[in-house]
Length: 229
Image 1 (cartoon, rainbow, N blue to C red):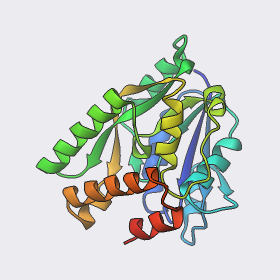
Image 2: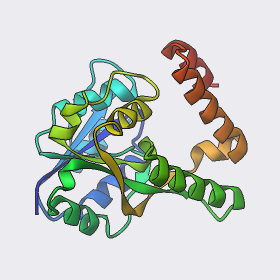
Image 3: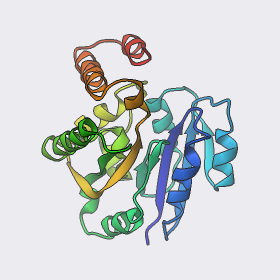
Image 4: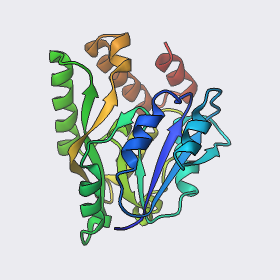
């Protein structure tokens, strides 16, 4: 099986990172795990190193700068980008392995389907289906769906830009101009924490507003103020 580099940006993720690192051990080929940290003061580094990950201190905090630094310092031709609060499906390694061995798969970028780690809630059920429809029809998967990409394609579009927010949308919009973004046809489980703080509709509206403001040229500083409220 081909080698795979997994890049995970972190900030104070010691409590959630171990489960994802355990999921990654199912990979049966060469595996490089790069944890790119934005200044954690908890046990994130120790947790990652115990699992055999390489921990890098990003020169600049923020998901965009951390992802760019992590991918730039990874070694394998295929890169899988994941958020630290994600959980991989049990058969993820079979699906990704099949993609890596498929001719011309490197011409596309790949993402997981979206699923929230929460007890059944009608609005979350609807949200999952709307996100997955958007991802397939508009080819706009976001960061909490992961990204599997071959390095030459990643480099072709310029990789992640050092944006504190919207780094995922910025990248997939550039990818969509030169490649097809496809589903891996299995779901990545993402933490329900943000939907526990506010309603699904309020969170969805907040996210849509941030995307609209970003597209209309609002500064990262302004976006961060809204994001952190």
